[in-house]
Image (cartoon, rainbow, N blue to C red):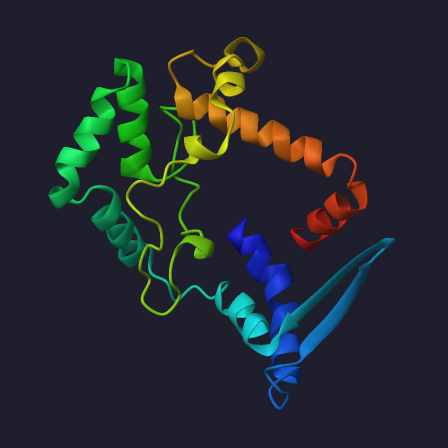
Length: 193
C-alpha cells in the first residue's frame, strides 16, 4: 500500500509542494485532480501540504518507529497497569490484547505480518519517529463491542479473537461507507494502482 502511495500520490503532492514554496502560510491552497470521471479535490494550508508529503517519505526507519511504539505500549514502568487491564479479560481476550499491544496491527490472531513493513505515518511524530498515542489506546474503545462480538458466525472468526472480529467489522464498515461513494472509491483505487 505504501509503495502504491509513493508511486502514485507522492509525485502529485511533490508537485504541489514545489508550487507553494513562495505562498503565504495563512492562505488555503486548492488543488483538483481528475482521474477519468472521478474528481479529487483538496484544500490545505501550505504547512499541511508539506506535512502530507512528508508523511510519505521513507526516512522513518521501521526499527526506530517500532521501538518507539513498544516503549509506550510495553513499557516496564506500566506493567502493573497493563496486567490489571488484562486480568479483567477472559483468557482468550488476554492473548488477543497482549498480541495487539506487542504487534500494533489490527489483525486476527495468527495472521502473517510480513507484508506490514512500513509504519503508519499518521501514528508517529514525523521528526522524531515517536509514537503519538497513549499506552491506554485500544482500537476496541471506538466501536460497538456488543455488535462486534456477535459477528463471529458472519466472519468465521472464533468468538475469543476480539481483534480478529474487530478487523472484519471495521473492514465491513469501511466497505459500507465506500459503497454509496463509488466515485470516491474509484478515485482512490486509481491513485493506488
